[in-house]
Length: 277
Image (cartoon, rainbow, N blue to C red; front, side):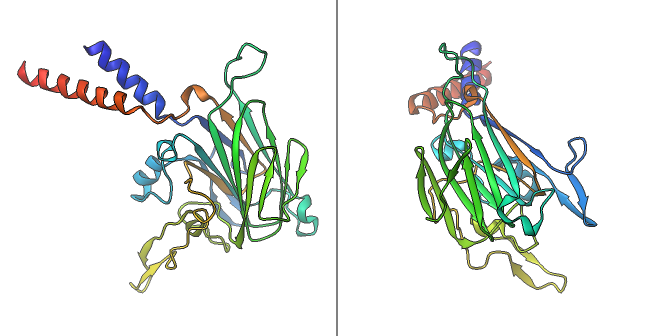
């Protein structure tokens, strides 16, 4: 019984793990969590998920677990600008996004197909997003938020963003009609509003003791584009590249109801037997 119980718990745990891991190139040194830029301190948010948000802020901050997205991961990538940003360069300011398939060989010389993945791309300044996608990555959608014009290439092919809703190589691409950006949790500053993109509102007392709200209008601009919610938040004021390693051996899959019920029954039976001993 103990072995069966451990096996069920291991299966349930593996099905609830995040399948993608993000690393970022920022001015932070040695994997640091913050850095100074123009005499201001900026935080680095890597693989920030719901459990961590609740633990740190006691709020969900608009994040969900992949199970709540029917197993799909929606990975948020945000920045204000890249390290070499020049306003005169316009859309020549580039940020790289690399989606790497780490699945084992499927027998045909390629990595096995990943689970469902979508992206949120958010920037304050005008940037060109250079997205590279490995074979057999199931990239469903890209949602773009910015206060300035953005450009997008996928595997070296330019995507026409003149329309707010585009389908490119079976990837649904939507550009928010609202000028908004976000690169930090819970608050950005610098004219960006993560809370309005993710649909959360924080209430706090200001220096005079008066109650203030960060999103009193309860905007949820991501929710205006999709029913998906963010499962992993990644961002900082300055980012040059995002690397997303995807290993579907840990892809979240909604548990069959029978397995959940059986697992619960085993837990209850185990606890009952222990009480009787």
